[in-house]
Length: 261
Image (cartoon, rainbow, N blue to C red; front, side):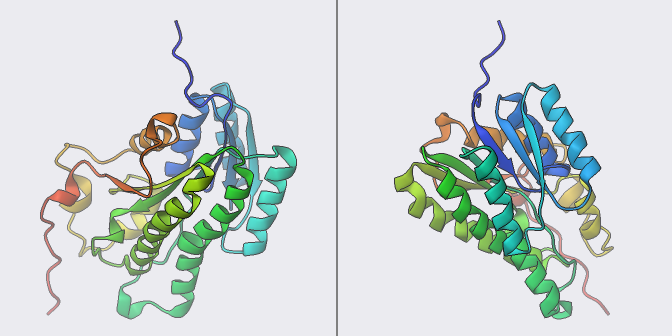
């Protein structure tokens, strides 16, 4: 007997849902019965491929191109969702970007770009998503260990993720009376294309991201499994939390880069 799909009948929006961690989350939610709306920014072909993979798992899949750095594009995306679906049950804030620079090399343009996509977009999307969650819902934001650990050339992203986690707590309390659960997932290093931008720095201690006490790196599917759980009724009493999924690496001492001569 096939197991019951725990998210059957739910409608889920996943920002940045066409590749990397977002793709894994999209496919997991689809496999659990949710119909998925895939937000993407760059490659339509990649989004269409992920949408077809979701359909192959028995889900309905819809793609929407929108640059979340632009508030009007966010508004347009939610207008489309409201017109086509009329409601939303799950919102996964996964889309992220940023510049790989140290604090002293960071300029205002890089700062604004990173904060707009990683923190402001979460706020604007959550505001609109809440209006479509007429019978309650689930929101999960994807963060990283850089929100609390100091990592080389990760200043802008780390600070933006810290803001995202703080916003998670505020939204969790404010939206609780509407039956909306809000949580975040802080992932350790995951082997994706985005990781290469940060691990190219020769000063980065490789053991900090190549190995974990669990014996392997975190996979996108590990994060997707946790996100899917947070979208179920079994997670209703988890509110405003940032759950770390890193194979235990944040519990161990990290070696510091050697000081420059």
